[in-house]
Length: 90
Image: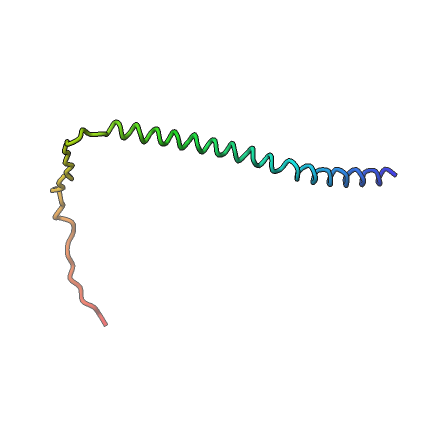
């Protein structure tokens, strides 16, 4: 009789869990997706604020001209190595 009660209890618990999970799973998923969406939105707002601050800091006056030149690398090393002529051997 004890084994029958144990098996009945296990089956009842199993089917009860399936029914409850079907009822509450959509609510739980909505809750977690809402939290993830809020986190993403906060990160995007922070990123947008940083971009605005960088634009304001680097903003130049209208009509101002800036010329950026690449530095001239005149320190080339002519003594790189020795050229060796070779012949193909058949």
